[in-house]
Image (cartoon, rainbow, N blue to C red):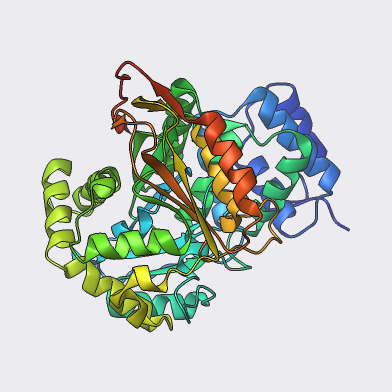
Length: 445
């Protein structure tokens, strides 16, 4: 087994250089990542470099080069039909289904969105699991099939292919076993390499902060956002990050089918008070995408345009077209509530009068997963109709006995554990709580 590519660069020297706090050359980084992707470097040496990066960090140039080396470690996607190619990425939250709204909006505006998404893991949901509750919908397209769908309707939503960014697959698995998951440099390179492999001209990042985010600290979230913006810009992709609040589930539902149901109703113009924050976040993010793509001159006018495309049915037409092209049965959207068939439900009610003051949103996410909506390890299956509905938002006045949340599951014994988790974290106080703004900060080059 060869461990040298090019021949004059030895992987041990790369490890020692980073361990000792030296800045790696572009050639060293590219040679090491090439070896990782082609399995020419041992797992032990790969793990050693991960720990060295965890301890020493990366300069902006090193991060940009690492991101690009990972991006080009396998096949990449390039639709380049003449239109601007833009995408959005969220660092993950509870009830965060904004991708299902944003991709049809930007496609309706004439832009291209090649959205490659992930599955549920940990306390957050996965876009692919939600899409696969649509009967017949196929998320396993080849890149050629992916391109054909995009050519017809402007966007497509699939999972990562086997040959897309293979270096990240190796590094991601090792990070979990080496105590390096939390490195913001490795997180940024992982996210950005997969996004930039889509051949993007522009990227808008939704970086969550708060109790339901992976990066709970505001400062940590801002640091990660800056790293990702620099990595994107350093690779020629216009990149903007929005720091957004994740202190409670976004929108009305958290789960799988129920989140599709919510987005379909929004696209069909059906109003519900619990939809407000999801709609606001979605059109704000889409507005930045439209601005980057030159559809509008500013993000504010982009937001107005996005709201128009959402309200006039143009986004919904794009959604229906995409679902049909990927084999989905769109008749379920005629009455999404009727398609929702959980085996059991339970209502969590307020135990006192007061104001809903807060909750540990990560705990809420884990309760949704315990109901069957998510997985603790990648091999777990998920339930299509598990999840929960929120009836009040932080700051709302409640009376004793009022419904706070309704729980859904396909496995009734799961209700007890989830209810205990939720009851332990929901806070009701006599005084009105301070409400954190949904959009905290915009970070751009």
